[in-house]
Image (tube, rainbow, N blue to C red; front, side, top):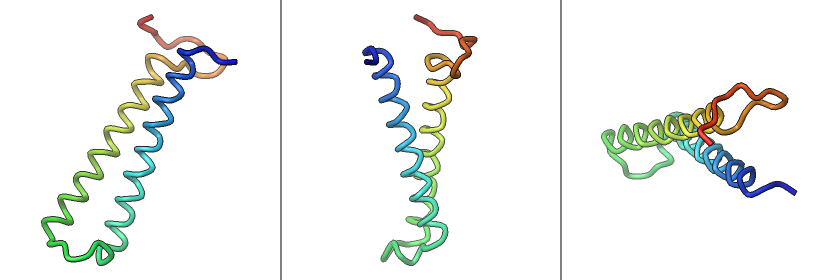
Length: 83
C-alpha cells in the first residue's frame, strides 16, 4: 500500500494532468469549431482562447514543478526534494 505522501503527490499530478487535458480539449474545440460556441463575439472567442491557454500553461507548470521537486523519475533519485 502506498503511503500518504505518495498518494497526495499522485493526486496532485493527476489533477494537473486532468486540467491540462481539459484545456487542450477547450482549445481544440475553440480553434476547430468556433461556431459551436454559440452567440459569442470575436472578443469573447479570443477571451476564451486566452483563458484556455492560461489554464494549459498553469497545468503544465504544476506538472513540471511536481516532477522537478517531488516526483523523481523512476529508478533515479537526482531531483532535489525540499523535505
